[in-house]
Structures are given as C-alpha cells and as structure tokens.
Amino acid sequence: MDFIKNLLELLQKGIPPIHKEGQPFVFIFAAVSLVMGMIFEPLGWIGAIATLWCVYFFRDPARVIPLDESLVVSPADGLIQKIEKAAPPAELGLGEEEVNRISIFLNVFDVHVNRNPMSGEVTQLNYRPGKFLSANLDKASDDNERQSVVVKTSDDKQIVYVQIAGLVARRIVCDLTEGQKVTAGSRYGIIRFGSRVDIYLPTGVTPLVMEGQRAVGGETILANLKGKQETRKGEVR
Image 1 (cartoon, rainbow, N blue to C red):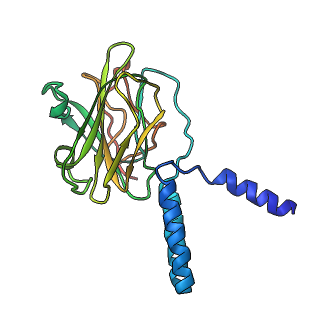
Image 2 (cartoon, one colour):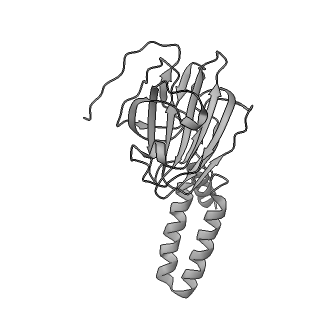
C-alpha cells in the first residue's frame, strides 16, 4: 500500500495541471477512446495514446518568474524564429515606426499557455480575423488571424504582443480586459494547436535572445528596458 501511495504521489507531482481550455478535449478524447476500445481493442489503444497527447498538449506547468520589472520575459514556449524590425499591427493605430519584433513559433509539442511579458496596464485589445497559414511563415504575422495586446508599464513604456493562429490552430483565447493590471509571467491565454506569438519591444530596446534559440514562457528574458546591450550573436554547436 505504501508503494502504491508513493507512486501516486510521484505521478501527481510529475504531471503538471491541465489548462481549463483543455479539460473538455481530454474528456472527449477519453470517452471516444473508451467506445473505440469496446468496439475493437487496438483502436482503444490508439485512442488512449491520442488522449495522453491531448493531456500533454494542454499542460500548464509552473514557471519561475524573474522579479524585476525592467525585464521582458517570453510570452510563450517555442523557437525564436525571427528577430527583425517591424511596425506593430496596423489595426492598433500605433504608427509606422519600426521596432524590434521577436517571433516565437510554437509546435504541437510546446506548452501553449501564454504569459504576460511585462507588468503594467492593458490599454488596448484587438482581435483581427484572417487566414490560417502555417505559423512559421513570415507573412503569418500580417495575414493570419490574431489577437493583439498593448500594455503600458509603470514608467510609460509600451509593449505589444500578438497571439497568431497557425495552420492547425483554430482558436485563440485571451482572458484579458482593457484597463486590467497584469504582472510579468502571469497567464493570460492559450492558442490551440500550433501557433505563433510576436512581441514588439519598446522603441530603442535591444533583444537579448537570438534566432534559433528556444524560449521558455515566463522564464526566458527577451530584453531589459533599462539596459544598453549590443545585439547578441550565436551559433549552433
């Protein structure tokens, strides 16, 4: 009995909680798997594997958030696919000045829970319908369905971050409201299933990450608003 109890406790600690958006999917996958297994046992095993993947996709692990309001943390897990100069989405009405944009691509195995990159007040939310091109394409930032968030920090810096639907993703969830106070690293939404998040840094702020680097939502430091760093370079080894 002690062995079973210890095993269950170990599993409980090792398996992160499931995001609320995923709970109905897990139930549906499990129910369908049960029916499939009653009809033909091998199908039940296939359904069980699919159910485990669903649990894995909607996992919502805890993260260690840096307690420094000058730091910009990653809003998502994934591959830093592109760092370039770009103007914020036109529908936000923020002008055409180009700033540093960091694009993070999330594949179907990444954690899809999104986190606020900085503390501040939500000053604008904008949803724009669009296409469902593969999220790793450059034009996905302009053409795909997206949800934009604008946050103003306590020292009047402005940061923009955008949830972008992908080829498979058909649902963007943003739990924020205008005027809401947010803290860096706090959860604010999720994208289903495979997607992209763009973050537009304030004017003059240099990224501290490089293309090809893996980012961890809420933990990876993308930039320092008070620092004056050179653009970083790296290579695969």
